[in-house]
Length: 326
Image (cartoon, rainbow, N blue to C red; front, side):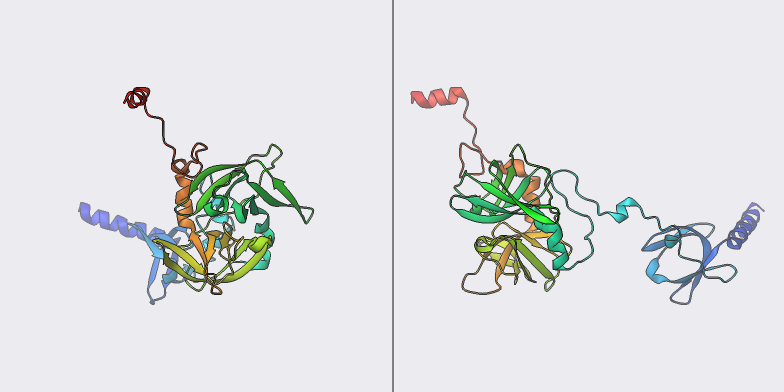
């Protein structure tokens, strides 16, 4: 008797529910009737009375009310999108890395937006390129651009009133270096330095071979030069390391500059080319750059040993005394 009462109650409940529910027609000519609890861009949650099921959006043909009228998509009724969906989530802290890539744009549009964060790195021995990674003036370049140098200046092109104002910063400190993977982290420490425009780091892994990329740098001292090409391969092995290979022209002076995807995100640091060929440029994948930045304390630069990224501590005084006695 109790079982029959339960079944009858369940049928009544289902009848009440379906009276105010919607019918979801599937692409395979099936239908589900229930109350829609939530709609997302990729799925719909439906209460069918005794359980809740989740239906993939790509399996739904349309949604109908019980009177046969097609219901408007709930996702569009309020046109209110959570802030996390409107703005890519960035990694908090030292540098920015979006969870989702921004829409693709033209190189022409992106250059106007990104150019201010691409800099020229000068030393007595030569010059290279670099890019700023946060508003506090931290920037990345290649180790070989500053190798053996302590007097470094950075040329930044600030945009004011739709014009570029060139500013040279002389107080530049080396923060961390990894000479084995050709990366260096610097910081502009001039007292009059403003908050800087900076670039966002993307993902080289997310790119496919053949996708368009472009570089901004100072080849042969020609600052703010833009070159465009495609990603030739993501796994070019050279000297035990994997590099991105691109047809975007890379020349001396480009070293340390950013290689971008078409969303304006940095996907590599340009660092070399094959001199006897054309369209054979290479860049350090951004995944390795992020690892370097995440573990920058391990690569901290030591003024006592400027050619080595590692700092050796003094031995205990008793050990030094014993060595002296011997």
